[in-house]
Length: 109
Image (cartoon, rainbow, N blue to C red; front, side, top):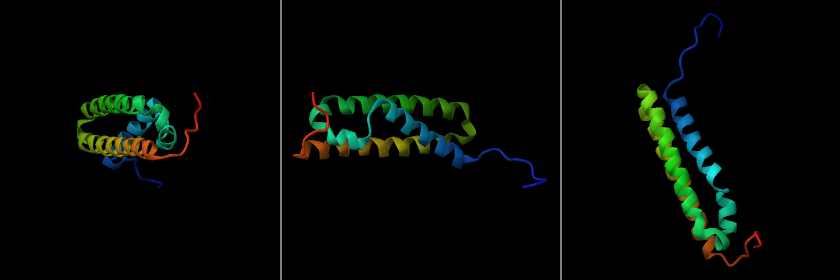
């Protein structure tokens, strides 16, 4: 609004940025949970390996961000932990559901 000075972002923004980086990094390492479920019969052996790699990379970025911005560290860490847990659970569910399914995979090797 006119006449007001801008304020710095608060912990909510830091939380969202931290959560967003986890989703981005895990997505960079893996296909979507939907694709993972559809192709678990073909990819189950490597799926969780790449989810774990993404979680470790995410943890490194979140840790560095928390060290850099110590004022907002609790929000940064909370966002990273929540997003990491949700993404890990999503892929674990996708793997289990895909392996339990009798539907054919969408990828042909």
